[in-house]
Length: 103
Image (tube, rainbow, N blue to C red; front, side, top):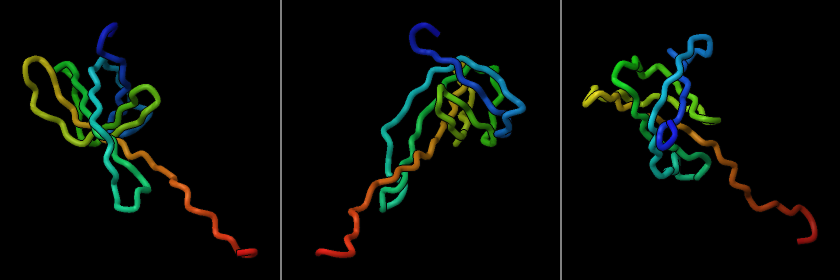
C-alpha cells in the first residue's frame, strides 16, 4: 500500500453495518456529463482487488472521502478481481441573476 494501493472500505449490500476492509489499486477515468444540462457528472473507475474478495453489484465502497457504487464485477483473472465503480457528482452551475428593476 506504499506505492499504488490504498485502503478501501466495502459496504456489503450497501449497508454501513456490514463492512469489510480491502487494499485496492484504484484507477479513475475522466468524468463525463450525465445529462445535457450539465447538472451532474458521472465519475467512473476500477478497483483491482485480490481474487479472494467477494463483491456483488449491490455493494458500495468508500475510497477516502468518496462513496462509490459497484457497476460491474469482472471475472477473476491472474489472482485479481476487477470491480468497475461509478460515482455521481452533483454540480450546481450558477445561472445569471434575474433583475426585476432598473433594466
